[in-house]
Length: 399
Image 1 (cartoon, rainbow, N blue to C red):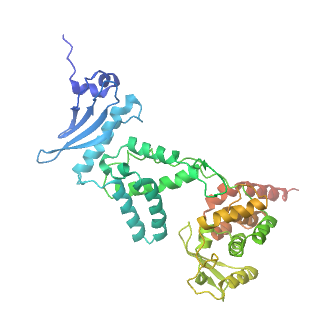
Image 2 (image 1 turned 60 degrees about the vertical axis):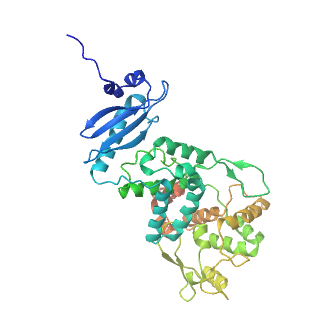
Image 3 (image 1 turned 180 degrees about the vertical axis):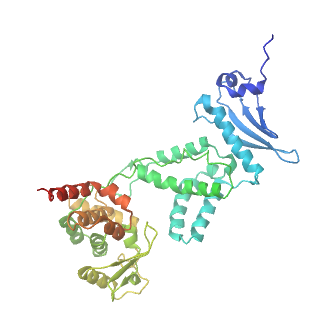
């Protein structure tokens, strides 16, 4: 009995079959279901090839959707992955999903509008800066229609972003440095969120193009180990310009994030009740903190003679502090004092939290509330301190 000869379309299933295909511009198509075909295009003998989905609507008109080369997938699994992606797109189109596609840039713009509508103007402003630097500046990438976005494109964008060195802001030093993993994660997050919102709003069939390529780097946010003791913090206050000294002292007294402290206005502190209202913080929640007498007096002194909307801690020019304004002068003072090169403004918050746990024996729930973070983050970054507390507690049980 003669062996039945396989058709050309059958050969796209296996690696060897695809390798034996003759190069041509027209794709080799295989029917998956009625009016839905999966195609493989091989234009040169040594190319990886490209996968294409073809969908026919009720009128018989065909629409094509690129699935990319799928190079990141193991060769013998590419067919299965192509079927999966094609099927998702077929279901998306047959379920009423739009054939019109917005671009990557428009996807980012939609996300910014979503943040503004969700009463997160600061988040929108921060993400706009990241989009302008990393997405909009890459004209080809940002102009890519979402339905044509592939994992190869996203991977190339990610690698380009990671390879971009950081320019040192301290002009007294020369050169550049590699981008930290935690910084890379922060720059990946807005694009990932924008694309996920588009998926949620049914503007794209699947997240296959970016799900694996925009994953955050694991263990990027390592425990903060730069601790400044009380004498070092006092030295920073005593040796800094008066405007910066006030901000440093505030961060040494209350464990807020530097950005949250810098955003406080005079109206944030109720002098009558000695209550500080923290409205802008990474936690996203407003919270009120009752200040002890000495700290309340310090905050009261800072608010004297200022309008209610003025910065509680202002630069000498009257403007709000920000990381670009405090970074260099803080480093200069820290360097003069011979402090660790890891000593940055954020180290003040870390040091204050450490003291609350080690010296004041404050429970971690209260510490988390004061600092505007979660119990999980306190345990992750300060668990080693809690372990010493546990050992001391167990020692007290000795008979």
